[in-house]
Image (cartoon, helix red, strand yellow):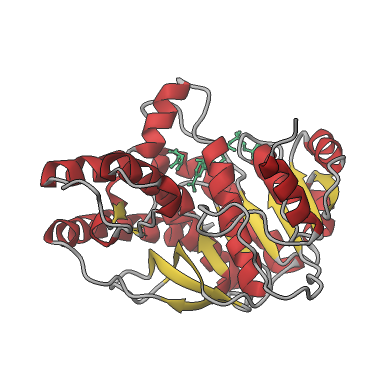
Length: 355
Ligand SMILES: NC(=O)c1ccc[n+]([C@@H]2O[C@H](COP(=O)([O-])OP(=O)(O)OC[C@H]3O[C@@H](n4cnc5c(N)ncnc54)[C@H](O)[C@@H]3O)[C@@H](O)[C@H]2O)c1
Ligand SMILES: O=C(O)C[C@H](O)C(=O)O
């Protein structure tokens, strides 16, 4: 017997409503209150045949805000595109492989999501991926500047703390940089913080919100549990907050170790990437009050890039929100993360300038 949730998803899709919401906790929340036709929106995924790329392609095919889905990878895209294209949802799917097809994949894109590059193995830091992924990201961003300079770019490839600055430099060189349109995807940190907090605070996970600020690597990931909602149903000790913070910071490593050499988070990342892309599409479509944490050009601290809550709108970033009040523990965490984040940002900028 078909469950009521499946009937509800189907009827939501028929009405052209959003299936995933940026807060991730109300799967069927409507993105529009009127029955106005949805605008055409093209999404391109670069690295679409990979561990993240495949489930992300599936989730974007399920998103009724997407009218065209372009799947690009250096290998394997025809199979992924053929497979996903059989799903009876709105998005028209096309697969592209090799650089002579990347222009067609990118042209007309509103949002470009980049999960291209190598993942970690146990014992590695995200920065250990720099040597390979910096070149991949730089090359892909050169094509973005050429074929879809106005697209919102969602950078997933690690190390995000460096790949976002690399992208900014490539776009600056090409004369296409718009700081409102470049995002490091840090949604997985928020997804993890929500899950871990709900377990300890004994509150329903679907209701939880926790801002995560800073960057996306180790101690640069700073969850603000003092701002978590709803309030905990049990008193959380300082030790418990420290443990929750550490678990959020080490969430990626927890998965890398559990996968024991077979890569890093792919399924939870695809979910998080789909939430963030959905938020970008809603912003572009004029849905009000779409707020997500993301790593962007920022003046919230003295660092040129920083993750914090950002209001998304028709042009991408509408407003970078301030951090709000922090506990003493979080203030300390903020000061401790700055040197590492600064050096990762500078490393990315230096690479892009010299190569
Ligand atoms: N931001 C985050 O929170 C987050 C979370 C998880 C993983 N990641 C990062 O995402 C990246 C991808 O992870 P994965 O598990 O999907 O890896 P994967 O190896 O499974 O897939 C990567 C894909 O990228 C493709 N690729 C390589 N070079 C390319 C190029 N020049 N153009 C297009 N495609 C190219 C590969 O063919 C492969 O299909 C890694 O760098 C990983 O560290 C980030
Ligand atoms: O940990 C990784 O290497 C992948 C990703 O950044 C994550 O947070 O899961």
